[in-house]
Each structure stands twice: as structure tokens, then as C-alpha cells.
Amino acid sequence: MSEEIERVKCLIIGSGPAGYTAAIYAARANMFPVLYQGMQPGGQLTTTNDVENFPGYPKGVTGPEMMVELQEQAERFGGDVRTGWISKVDFTGPIHKVWVEDKKEIHCDTVIISTGAAAKYLGLESEQKYLEMGGGVSACAVCDGFFYRNQETVIVGAGDSACEEAHYLSNICSKVTMLVRKDEFRASKIMAERVKKTENIEILFNTNTVEVLGDGQGVTGAKVKNSVTGEEQVVPCTGFFVAIGHTPNTEIFKGWVDLDKIGYVIGVPGSSKTNVPGVFVSGDASDKDYRQAVTAAGTGCMAALDAERYLAAKH
Image 1 (cartoon, rainbow, N blue to C red):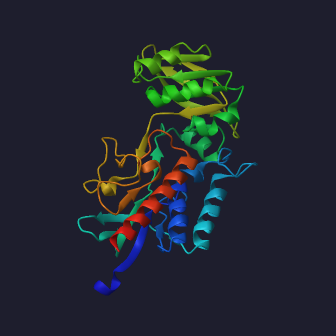
Image 2: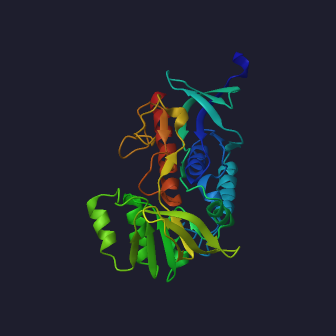
Image 3: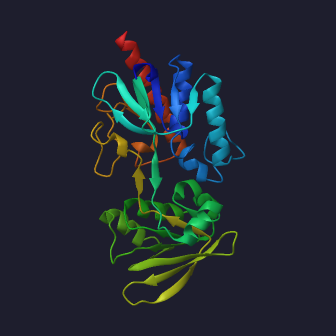
């Protein structure tokens, strides 16, 4: 029924650093943003115990604390932060329609997509245990490698990003063991060669992880198995990094905004614009290169400014 349709100037979908930063800027510009937090309020950072590389936190901060503070900052300027998730969109006309949990219909002048991406994990019970505990399992070497300086680490993966992260860890850690499922890398030749030439990186091909080992508080090693010989061994490590890719949370936008073959939103270079006028993107939903809280926040700012300019041009 028409009276149940809410009309908003700016709808933000997602609540990580990108979504909350977009809400702060949009609220300060009198766009009265409405933000839906989605299935994981606060996004990926809520699974991160220590954030030490975000400017302005000299002593570091936990991921959940940082998200609470960002939410409070958005609300302080009038951002309307709501629980719930967007289940469907219709971007056919100049007014963008979205549905909250298949029930409530909202008509929006502008939409900012900040739905992020989810890291892929191996799915082992032991891996999830130490991931949830914050005890040595991570999907971001750039974020967490510092905590394992001068220690031995393991990284799982065979693509460019796995090679990049292994190389990054090799500058911090005493030894990096790379577990590659097949008998060759999927990475580009130049990246694979760089890893092979790095002295403190050992590469184990045809190798799968059987179990992440620990003492109940942190990771102590990885039990691995060679898929050709069947031989098992334990690789000592205090940090277990998984670099097997990310899945962008963009399924509901398929057919409306341009996505690449993995599902990342294809933005207009140098801006936050998508192929749909009035629909903007920020954060990891379109960023497969950097995936940092600070870059996500920056693109959240860009999206709010682009949305503001779009609305100003219409009046």
C-alpha cells in the first residue's frame, strides 16, 4: 500500500567503515541518510580483534569498538542507523526502489552500496575456532602480519594476492610456509617468481590443510597432507593466513549494476559512480586491491560527496 512506502534522500546499504563514513558525510550535508546494517552489523572488522593501522588510534582499537564509535558518529549528525537487510532492489527508474527483508518498500533518490565482501576460508572446524577467538587465523596479512613479526607463519593460496601477502609476510616474519593445493601457482609468472626467489618462503605444492593446531589460546601449527604421496606433516606456525579469495556481497544487485565476473561492482574510474545514475558504490564491494578500513572509509566519503552533487544537479 502506498502509505507504507517510505521516501528517503539517501539510502546506505551496509555498515562497515565505508557505510558509516558515507552516513557521516551525508548526514552533515543534510541528506538525512538511512543506513541498513545488513547481516553483519559493522562488517568484516567486527571479526578483527586489534586494529592498529587506522589513523587516529595511536594505541590501537578493537574492530567492534571502532564500528560502535563510527556508528555513534554517524548518529550524532542525524544518520538513521537501522537493523535489517535489503533483500531486493529495482533500479529501473529515476526513483530507486529497495525492499527491507521482502516487506518494507523504500523509494530512494540516491543509493550507496557499501555491502562489502566476505573472505573465503577453508571451512575447517579448527580454523573457525581460532578465527573466532582471534588467536592466529586471519585472511589479511597486511592487517595482521605485524602481530607475527619475527615468528613463523603459514599462508594458504596460489593466486596473485596469496603471493603478494606471502611476500609481505616474508619482510616481517622469520619464515613463511606457503601451502599450494595443486602442483603450480595460479598467480602471474612475475608474482610466482618473486615468491620462489624469496629465501625465507618455503612452498609446499600439492598440499592441503588437515587441521589448524593450537594450545586453546593461539595457533601453534598446521597439520598438512601431500595429496600425491599421502604423507602428513606438522608445520610449526603462530599465524595461519588464508588467501583464497573474497566473495563480494553483491548478489542482489546482479542485473541492475555492472559487476565483474567475480561479482565486484564496476565503478566509474576516479569516482564512486556506477552505471546507474544515482547509485554509488564504496568499500570492498568494489575494491579487490586494497581492502583496508582506511581506504573503505575514503570511498565512503567519495560516495556521499558524489551523491550530494548528483542531488544538487537535479534541483
